[in-house]
Length: 249
Image 1 (tube, one colour):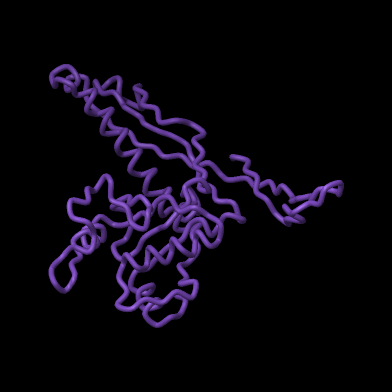
Image 2 (image 1 turned 180 degrees about the vertical axis):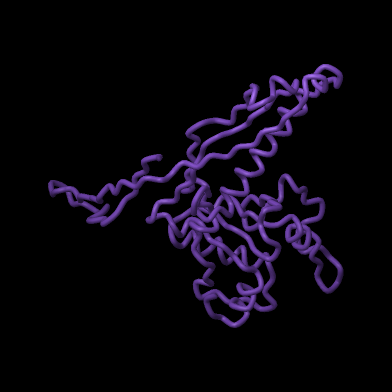
């Protein structure tokens, strides 16, 4: 387990103070929470002959295992449900999109993200990233007005794409038609055991001239209750309808 702390039951706060008078006291309770650390693993078996005969076989196997672990961790940090062996990911921590009373004519995906940014800032958070499907990023990037001009600036590179001042992160794990807006400073990823690759014998490996490459790491993700609005899940179709109709989704 990882022990995390969050604030609860705030009292008082900052205030203006006259000369010679008592200062203003702010107070809150520290609530301790434990988050279970989850393990990601993968192994590959290979014969010693293959290691001897194929140039860079060992390096390729190690790299493959590293990529497998990193992709699974990315998937879990995004969509893990927190049950059994799964990490509790952003999809589980996230709150739902609301319009905050904003309306838009002919709303599109960019309008939705701008609205979500406005609402998050209004809740005293600073959105830093929006995670979207690469397919949706392509649609947004190529959107044109009726006269054929690009709505987004042309030559808007994938690495530098920003919407409403927020960095766009294209993630294939995000379902097309949805997105996650986050204040990354409020999302805590804890690595209990960093990614390692070890080599050894497993069961009858020795007698069959095989070796086992094993990769693993342990991690968890945490968002404090008082920071829940720093992670927002967006369904574009529902959000566009809400903006057009002037109602929260």
